[in-house]
Image (cartoon, rainbow, N blue to C red):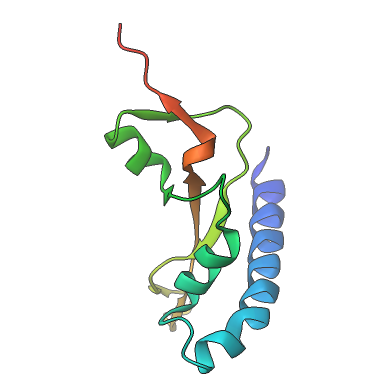
Length: 109
């Protein structure tokens, strides 16, 4: 995947996450969830997908993410950047989580 394809893929992920976020916003307004990420995780949770963690978090727990596992998307903490004109802007990056159903124990050699 080249840089242009990667940028396009991330833009598509952001767009789908924005749509899902908007559909969950009434539940946050109603007080069902404290944060949008809490609402997102609840929407992803099933009997099969109960626990979520980052790739690095699963590695620290002694697990390996299965090949071709599709991540669950949540919003990251806001990041502040400066553009080429010196103007400061901030955005929420997309973060990738994997569920307990997408990992296996790490093989010890």
